[in-house]
Length: 212
Image (cartoon, rainbow, N blue to C red; front, side):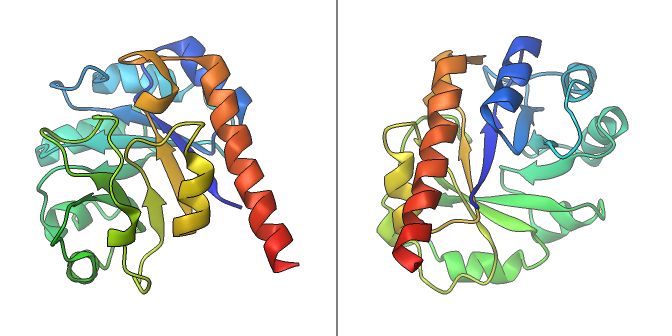
């Protein structure tokens, strides 16, 4: 079953709608320059709405150790996501499971990146855009080598219309969506979240049928 992460939530209603739609994880952006950014305290308020087995993910971009620890104080059970230029030791020093974002572009060596970030729970593959993610741009999935030794989270420009193709092509462990289920930056659309999750389940069903 392909796991689903909906990222960049800023409102209580959106958290509740994401859970109702079937999200396995929600992403809370602790990066002040992002239009989806929230404070650590606000992340804690939103994360406390989650039922068991829905994972909060705290996203950081080149944050200080103090900023990461402040987020963990508010959301103690969070998975971490590093989306900037962090080195492997920067990510691993908190001794917590983490996702490491890889910004895919022609010439990017994902196998070398995976080797350097071997302690990551998974690699999140995003488009290489100006800034750090959230650009709603897809990347060329053919850039992904077949033998990456870490679980992959497919991100970058996914939406209800293209996520089936993405899953069938990449066979990722999980998918991540943000702008593809929004009515405005940081404002999620409940109907789009439901359609996205339904499309993921359809892709899973197609893969199961192909195996059987």
